[in-house]
Image 1 (cartoon, rainbow, N blue to C red):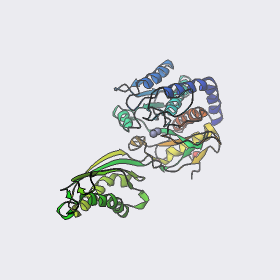
Image 2 (cartoon, rainbow, N blue to C red):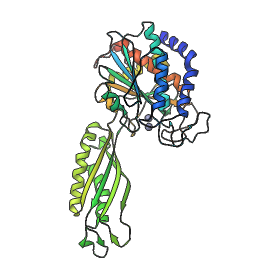
Image 3 (cartoon, rainbow, N blue to C red):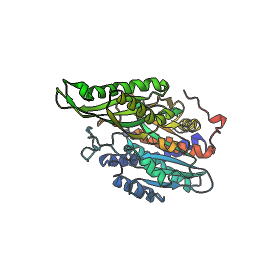
Image 4 (cartoon, protein in one colour):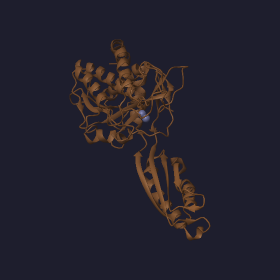
Length: 411
Ligand SMILES: [Zn+2]
Ligand SMILES: [Zn+2]
């Protein structure tokens, strides 16, 4: 089936189902659920998949599900959507505003979920007509925002036997109908760090008899980022930024403990792996110089999403096929984190940015209570994801092999 034929099939499918998919998205938007509490969302997805003749398998916690479309010996590829919402109040004045106080789909995961549902229904139809040359594993993943849902899906065999995986995220800086693509790293690592410093306190008249803890803490706050900037390849953009610091309670008393908390962000995977040991060594040397005790609590977040080049070419080819020529735009690596990265540490794949901005319309940002999308992005997303699955299966690519005619120039 060529691009034009696929476009015709997608047109027919969406003419029949697009309104219903928009209603499905609005229902999810009105009933957002936080990470690992997506019970209703999971049930709604499962109901729709079952009604289409598929066999969804809900994960043991009761949130998130895995479902497979197709059969036979062809390759298996996976498509992933995240289904959780954020602990933010919905500030929009729309009919589908969140009905749950303090919880909102402000990251667009309701849109991702709806797109994957629509894609599943389309692929089920293709499979029934014998037009699916392989299997597509549908991953409706819980708890992306925690993060950790990707690990839950993987722990239950979500990507075993899967050759490639694809996912997408709403991008309010890209016009609807377009997709932003980039080979290599596209998101960043983001970890949390907490430091506790302690030492003998006392009167500010006699700092030499104490550890002068506030002074020592201030040195740690400035020396750690400074030391890192000299010890790490600047191209990795490893940055330690403090968000909270606390010590002392009176102007003339040196306290005996204090804390600092911040985030470590990084664009490069190897620098990210090395960061905790390096920061610990710097902390010990600065704390030692000022005679204070320091302990560090380092919480790993997610690694950067590193897009496989061949998989990005498949996404580009799919966009050209399903959305038309000129719909692929280059995109930048963001400093945000995304737990899709965990899948890509095991298998090749790629993550795309789906345009959700109405041309000439309002500018939104994700993780804001005002965030919303141009809902025609749902139709574009279904076209793009379905074409991605079929492209990856048709071409039967193996890592390192890309057919000449499929290569689309990317910046
Ligand atoms: Zn988010
Ligand atoms: Zn998100």
